[in-house]
Amino acid sequence: MQFIITAYDGTDEKALDRRLGAREDHLQGVEERFKTGEHLYGAALLDEEGKMIGSVMVVDYPSREALDGWLKVEPYVVQNVWQKIDIQPCKVAPTFMKLYEG
Image 1 (cartoon, rainbow, N blue to C red):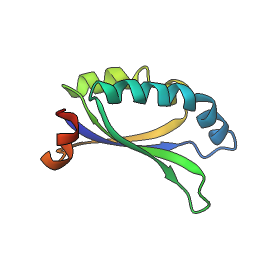
Image 2: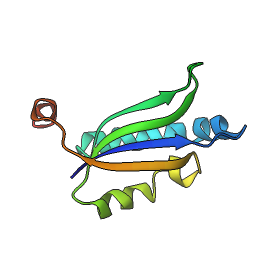
Image 3: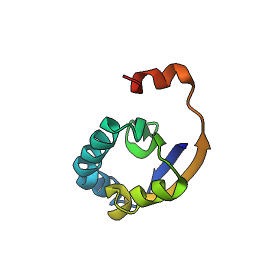
């Protein structure tokens, strides 16, 4: 199943510090899951000043339960970066999925 995840960072004065502190571990996990085809696309959400305030990701997991399993170990969740997470099932167009078919 494919999902769009829109996750918003906290708005307190330490929010960006938490993000930057967890960022290397987050990106390493994204890279590993990209190689396995679980993470299809991701981007940082920016405010008007260009400061990172959240994330959007398109992921592909066998079930919602598998997705929830990843979220339990995701550094941005574990380190309290993402404060609000919206998850919506989606279907990625076949044209874009050709990248993952080899």
